[in-house]
Image 1 (cartoon, rainbow, N blue to C red):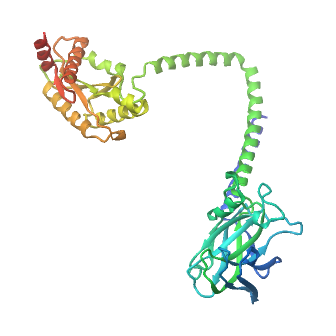
Image 2: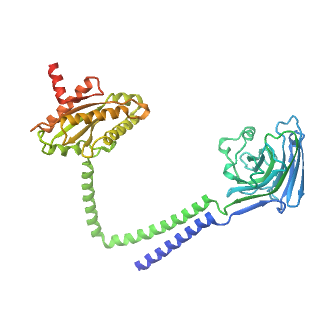
Image 3: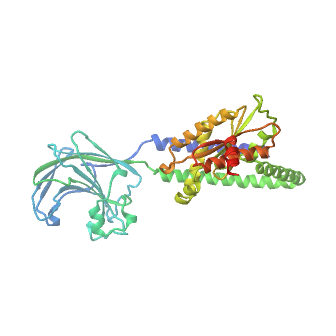
Length: 443
């Protein structure tokens, strides 16, 4: 019975996968829903000019075969924005517009009979009860775009997402910010008009047709539908699996308890392992525990099996934290460790000792070579580009492990060398021998 259920689930899953793929392919490559506006359209079509706004321009509309001819005489007047336009009404008998939210682009076959320097304005007029009033046509939103070079680009292709709402309309209607963007949920009219900087004179505009195209279902709606189908399927699978798990738990309770006990033991061991992690979480280099094994080996300063230690401290790091904050300080620490890692040898071991202090363990390295490496690192740090254009330097203390010397004493000598480097002006390299001489002179 269980196998039959699993086979059924697999078939349902395969069916859902096929349906999803087909829906996505159809959405991407399938036919578009096209709304064509032209002489074959059963729409009310009219010419409009600025006389309704106090202007004097005159527009007349006539038909020539399958084309509309808009004759326009722009006459200067007190009205500042003269225009002529052809208007296609999309309202039904109840006055409601068409939802074009799923449509993606417009193809516009419109141009002047002779090329003009000003453009052709295309507008979709949208109604929204939040700001529109039935009795006031000026309260309808103008989703507009102005097109140029209509003779060279014929037809013009307009992405709906490229259309904008004129600032003058937003200011005139005192529209709140949430409605500043284009809207196409109830388009009541499509308008093609003369451009913004039209001058007085006679013009003729030829409008062949307008095609508004888009998907039969919006991408967002399709994706939500598919996500819903997959979510319901996942929920059904989850419920089925849960019922099956409950039955198995009842049959295998003792085994489950043993597995849980084993998991608790493994989790405890995993926690102990995680507590012994040897990496610094910020910089990714070793921490003190990660560097500890290097001191457990046998080193002989009189042979090639020597060990040198370089203590490195970022100069005035507290000032960086106080001035720019710990976030910038962390960026400096990370970049600092990267500079050190990029300029050391593969067998050198870099560790963050604490705060802004780092330690570089150099196996098979004599004191002179370690000093040369420290000086190279000092220059690299001084010349590096740092966050916030900071000037970052570092001080270096270098020591070589002595025969029979304990790790504690070895580390202390390198630390004293670093102390002397900081005391003598910072941004320099000092060895344990130099530090011993300085400290003896002080005494």
